[in-house]
Image 1 (cartoon, helix red, strand yellow):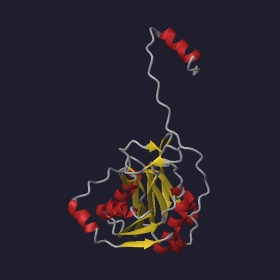
Image 2 (tube, one colour):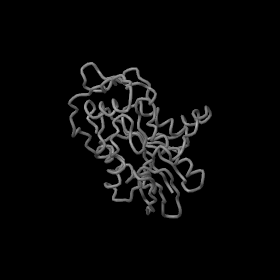
Image 3 (cartoon, helix red, strand yellow):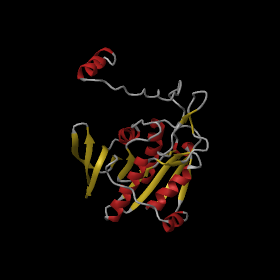
Image 4 (cartoon, one colour):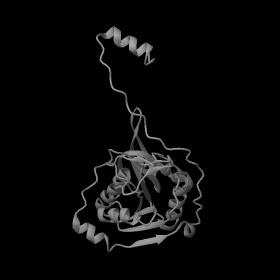
Length: 249
C-alpha cells in the first residue's frame, strides 16, 4: 500500500509575520521557513502507518520554488521513502495545488493521500476537499485518529459538536488535525540519510496544469492592536458597559 503525503513550505509558526510596506503581501524576506505544522503531522502519521505494516511506501510531494527541496528533505528524514518536487515560482492557489496533486496521484496510484487540514499561511482549508472531488474518492477531513484495515480506513474526525467516526473505502484523502499525533524529533543520522533518497523534479507543464491566478489580493493589513482592558467597580457597571459600549447584550 502506497501513501502520498503533500507538504508545504511556510513561514515558521514561531515567527511573527510582517506586512510589506505597500500592503501587497506578507514579507518573507530573511524569514525562517519550515514545513507546515499540519503537514508535518500528516508525514508522521504516514510513517507510523508504515511502521505498523499498513503502508509499504511513502512518497512526499511539494509544490513551489526550489527551496521546497529543503522541506522535502525534512519529510525524507522523518521517514518518507522518496520525494516529488513540482517546481514553480508562481504563487499557487488551492485549486491549482489540488489539480497538480491529482496529476501526481494519477501517476503514483496511492491508496492513501495524507495532507494537513490547512496551511498556516493562507488558512484556506480547501486543498484536501478539492483533491478528493477531483479524484472522485472518499475523504476524511480533520482526522484525530486513523486506522487502516484491509481496503478500508476508519477515521475519527473532529467536528464542532465533538467527534465523528467514518469508514472510508480506499483510496481516500485524509487531512490531519492537530491531535492526530505529535511529530517525532528528526535525528542527525536520518537527516544525512535523507540526502541520498531519490527526489524527482517536475514542472506544472509536465503535469498539464494551468497555474494562472484566479484571485486578486486587494490589500494585506495587520490586525488592529487590542485595546487595554478596563476595571469596573461592580456588576451593574459591567452590565452597563456590555450593553451601552460593547453592545453585546
